[in-house]
Image 1: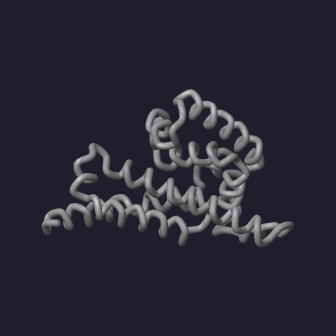
Image 2 (image 1 turned 30 degrees about the vertical axis):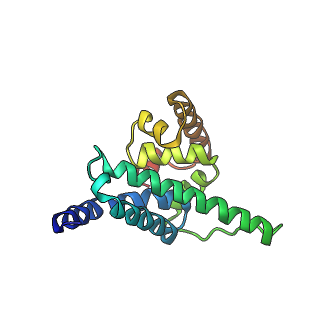
Image 3 (image 1 turned 120 degrees about the horizontal axis):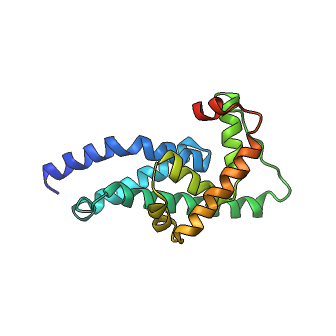
Length: 168
């Protein structure tokens, strides 16, 4: 790879890593895990940078790879926990503040696809069409997930004032 390719990738990495890791942190609930999957996606992008860099939005390719990695790891972890800790209930540690904890906990109670749609739409600021492409579902299905998720979140977060939810 030419030196310019490395420079281009370094700029791309610097501009993309933190936003994507932040979104995946909300999805996984584990900052180190989120950073690991984004790092792995970035490594895969670097290995294919001559191709990925020609895409209209290279970040979309990396995002999709990172989300797929996070989902795969989540499934393996869940299956491992099922096999090794039957009957064990997970204890959630409090986060940085009660409002953030409430929002993250409410998101965690959503079905995986609804949570993923909410994160991609509201944190990643992606349009419904792009979310549908990423998750392999129809746009109407994604709209339905978002509607159901908003309804569930509104019920779960009804104790928070609207400005508190926006701040989180």
